[in-house]
Length: 481
Image 1: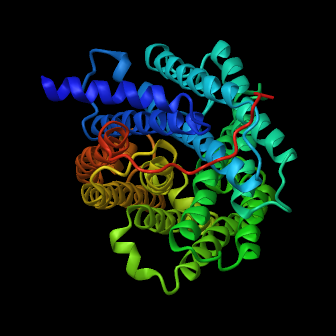
Image 2: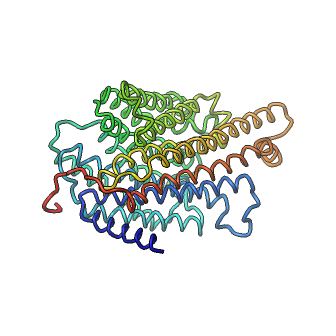
């Protein structure tokens, strides 16, 4: 009882202190992001349990697959990804622009409002089901608030950069600026009225591809360059190559979206363009990873004892592997087999439950102690949790990818041989071939969720129980301009 009272007193003290710091918006958003990450991972684990046991919870539509899937991705992409993007933006922008964050109070308030809107929108999806296609499932009233709260950080970051004192634009800020503008732009794409049919399919595909391969990872990937250079005290190996990776991602991510529907109703010329452009996803990821690895030259001995570096580099490696597989889907021979299978969900989980969380948490482990004035709580335990997340989350993703390949090959072989069709009873027959993989994936997802909960708990315990240390000194604005 006494320990609980002391912890609560410590939390109140920390909250009171951080509300007066110039990094308060970033600190609050890191905590919110960690909470959303655990909730989203838990919802995804429940979704995979439902996939393995379709009859589970049949008595209620609240936990049906059609309600759970959009809710889980909303919590991960909008809840976790959106708040993490804002946290990265509000922490990095004043440091790399050489000027205080503009309208810091508005940024802090908007962060809370955005988290509330996402929570309400997700609850509406669980209760009433999705309204439109992928990432357009929230009700119309929530859509308006989402666009507003997503535009606020984009405008604040842009306004701060307009007043920067540093010459040029650091490469990390290119990724941050892209992320904060891609989120509202892609949300609008997902929710605009379409002509139905093929147009609706392509609209959902563009929104989904953009969110998962561009908006979600961009800020965390940009932060990785900052973390590696700050932790090693070495200059970035090649800012030109890192910037080229950003523009390659920006120029090919959306155009590659139709590759997911290879052999479908999209025009052949559009599929050809998408197949070529999808290669850019792999090129951008490999280029970014190469910059990080080459920057680490001569500093690898520090990775084993530095949680921020280890999480960052591991997350970048998983991001690269997932991006290369996204690129491989662009080949028609591959897309025709795995296009509408759990291959896509496996890659989405690799991004949303493994790669981006590890990248973001690597940044949090670097930034949170410096902003909050509290040293990281039990870093050794955090490293063990990171390994648990990597292997369990990676296994979940890999099993769904393999299941997608088996399903796609079964459909094609069944139709070609005439032994069964790819719909109705034949579809059920192909599912029987991968049911064991779904079961193992569900168990692995539960373990991965536990690992992410431990990592998120490290942030919370740092808030309340970390040892006091010096904070980074930032220039504060005397007025909230």
